[in-house]
Length: 113
Length: 113
Image 1 (cartoon, each protein chain N blue to C red):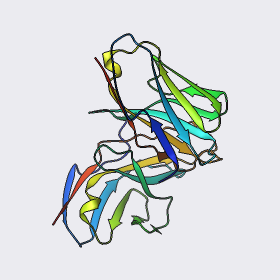
Image 2 (cartoon, rainbow over the protein chains, first blue to last red):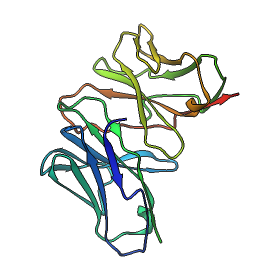
Image 3 (cartoon, rainbow over the protein chains, first blue to last red):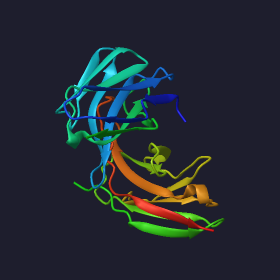
């Protein structure tokens, strides 16, 4: 497996609280992605990054923000968590050049009560 | 838009070859065929990809028809650890990192002891 870790692996929180998920890579890959996976929807792209401090929105970005202050870390923040954000969140990375294979982290299971 | 069609489920006896089909009749000339799998609760795992030639790696073989409208993933000697959901994905060759992977519903492969 590619050197990708996600933290925390499990989190339970309450509606309205802020939550930050962390993706850490040791592969020095340029591109990083955040997906969410829900039953009946497959994986959907939330945000992605194409370099330090360079990010852009995916197809389901509302309610989420991201930051990338260094190559190895990509943070996903839910400013005010809602029950609809209960999901499994996966981080992925890909190589120096776009079009390379994406490799996924182990996932974070988030429950918003 | 569904770009790939896969059977929802398949069984295979342990030790036998597992052949997973995928239809991608609308594939464009600049699109790769990728295969991932997801073992329960884990992150998607990259298996193999190809453009038009058959490919083989340590995990599997990928056979792409000459017209590129379908492909078959072959696991040569299936083990119980190969039980997973297998996803066939088409994605464009790109020099940008913003292409999302569109996971459909995949094929749930069950290896029978």
